[in-house]
Amino acid sequence: MNILLLGSGGREHAIAWKLSKSKKLKRLYIGPGNAGTAQLGINIPVSVTDFAAIKNFVLANEINMVVVGPEVPLVNGIFDYFKNDTLLDDVKIIGTSKSGAQLEGSKDFAKAFMQRNNIPTAKYKTFDKKNINEGFSFLKKLSAPYVLKADGLAAGKGVVICESLTEAENELNSMINDMKFGKASEKVIIEEFLNGIEFSVFVLTDGTSYKILPVAKDYKRIGENDTGLNTGGMGSISPVTFVDEKLLKNVEENIIKPTINGLIKEGIKYKGFLYFGLMNVNGSPYVIEYNVRMGDPEAQSVIPRIKTDLLDLFEGVANENLSGKNIEISNQFAASIILVSKGYPEKYEKGKKILNISDVNDSIIFHAGTILDKKTNSILTNGGRVISITSLGDNINEALQKSYHNAGIINFEGKYYRKDIGKDLIL
Ligand code: AMP
Ligand code: GLY
Image 1 (cartoon, protein in one colour):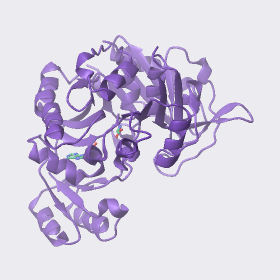
Image 2 (cartoon, protein in one colour; image 1 turned 120 degrees about the vertical axis):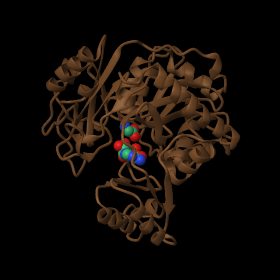
Image 3 (tube, protein in one colour; image 1 turned 90 degrees about the vertical axis):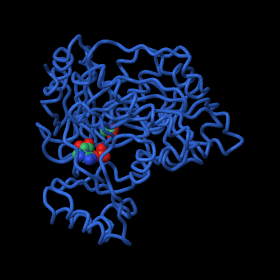
């Protein structure tokens, strides 16, 4: 099978790494990819949202399956673009339809979907320019902290938690009236603050049946002890010690099943990954958000724990016979530490030479913001999140120790990483 994998982050390197182990794989292309994916397949210079260019590449290179890594092409309708084109309609797409992608592309849609399908989530109301005054009155009825969310995609920055009423009022005004996040904040969700610990559950679904993938926790803030600005994610751990069988069963019965059944009931075609961002509130799970893709950096800890051939599972998704496949998960712990560029998540440096990657042999290195400098044949930093170092171990300590050892070895000017990833999960 010839595959085109779309994306360029650590998540896509992890997916490429796993696919490249499959006997069913013939050729792997990654568009646009990074210096790490270039070692596993052929990177092609295509934008993930340029559907016409993707179509031309798929037809010219006899691609059988397109695996979509990030959310933006899904929200823009890549699944529907392929299915509505007679030249492309038998190319398998791993990713949801545009209507399913609204679960991530519109928080208002996701909240209403959860309400319709009795899925536990924080109470909320949605406001826009027309009823912003009701929004100000609504805020007065709530107590701090206030949670405000831009309805649309805002590159992970659209959620603002305010400690005071004045701050919340200013934020509501700036999101709606000043269009702080552009069109994404035309509508704003104000919701109840949930107090608990977050974790992430992922499923792979063919639209009717699903496989639950390993549970993970990510670390979103730039600073240790979860302080400072939000990032794309500074590290991840899988499994999560506090997510026991009982809690996972609760998630499956009250969240996963009603979500899949809701999609079926509402006629929404969904074939791919579905990510449940959850909050454990005293043993009861609530949905904080849906994402229509794998998490990054959760994928870097989740995928190495899947023993089953991922390409075989993807075929099950595409052919809608996933229920006939088994999924085997390793009992080992995975710990991923992300090395980031100086300045990230604000303006950061690029073009720094990355040293000593080849000295690492007991961790898996997944590249994110890296690029190969052909002139000097060296790998340079090319993004905020640069490299993720994933290690497996028989316990969380062993996995962390290996990753931290190698985080010290790999080097580039301005390298930064959090030293407390997974510490909260050590029993
Ligand atoms: P999201 O982009 O929806 O994942 O939100 C970003 C972060 O904001 C989440 O990871 C949570 O830490 C926090 N958050 C979102 N919604 C709530 C809520 N209702 N209560 C408490 N924290 C929240
Ligand atoms: N790690 C959070 C995300 O992928 O959205």
